[in-house]
Image (cartoon, one colour):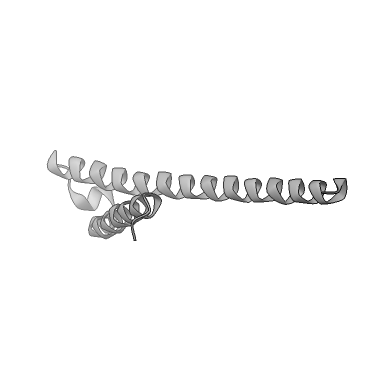
Length: 86
């Protein structure tokens, strides 16, 4: 192999590593946001269970149930995909 070819391959490898790192950071941020959605719903549920009126917590607290359910489902799917399960 020539030095030029080795340099080109190294550059391509570095670019691939950078892209993979970037994707991993994006997935990590998505997962963090999804966990926040689930936690927000749980906090709302706790406040309601403790006697606070739902209307005093949010305009439409029932919306948070759907958001939480979707977030939990997506987190589960991401974990399956990360484990190699389709």
